[in-house]
Image (cartoon, rainbow, N blue to C red; front, side):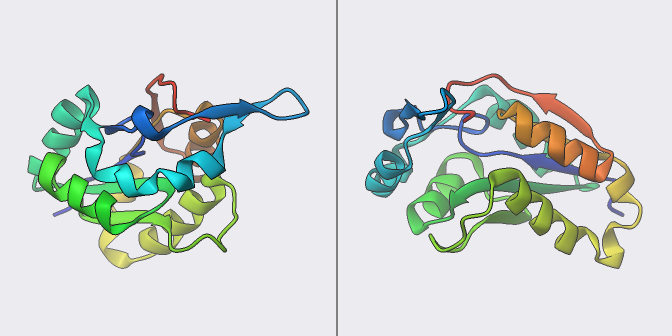
Length: 161
């Protein structure tokens, strides 16, 4: 029986993708991901390496028969990302991510929509009341925890933009 749901962001939480990550300062002074640089280096996703959260909390969730483990990322889930997850930390029960570049929703909105659709299933009636979101973007974490009244764990990283 599922009694808990553990949701993990990917970049900066489970995988170190800093070798292909760069931020920039917008005209309004906000620091944001340099999306053009990210897209240009997407083919290097297999070179990402596991972070401590992947080796401890994520691994424990995967091994727990009562836990449903989700990766929720604002990135496009490309083939190299899937191979990296499979080979280096293991695949989750479910992945939420962008299907294509035409999806321009904000990261929190994308993750909330994917979670709402999944959690509407009857099999999550009990587990959705024991949900944890692990995220490196404080704004996303706040919005997701508010939307689902769930526990949040903030993991500081240089990639949480």
